[in-house]
Amino acid sequence: MVIYGVALLAFCMFAGMTIGNMLGAALGINADIGGVGFAMLFLILLSNYLINKGWLDTKSQDGIKFWSAMYIPIVIAMAARQDVVKALAGGSLAFFAGVVGTLISFAFVPVLSKLSNKKREEK
Image (cartoon, rainbow, N blue to C red):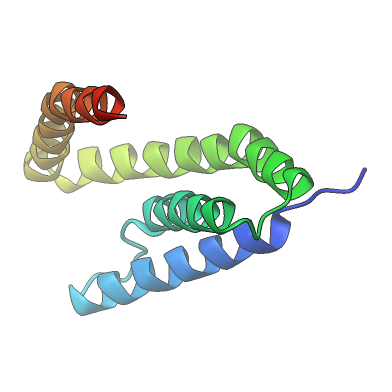
């Protein structure tokens, strides 16, 4: 089976992990901080950009969808588990910061949904 879109995924993962490690080094932490999240963000932005420009054919789009469905959730689950274990071992402040960040993210879902609906209505 030929898998398309792997090069884009690999580039995004490499770039995300590099930025995560640089962010960790800048903060004085010997760890990757948000590398998987940056990689996902890059993958979404780059794939949408390439699709809009017409540079990503259907097979590559299907390959990216495959990797998004199979690979990225597994990596995120592994990273999330490690982060929770480290947060619990590191003390209550890290755990509290994670909970607050999650709650703030949940609060923005309705805001983003309303913005998305307004854009759809304008079209």
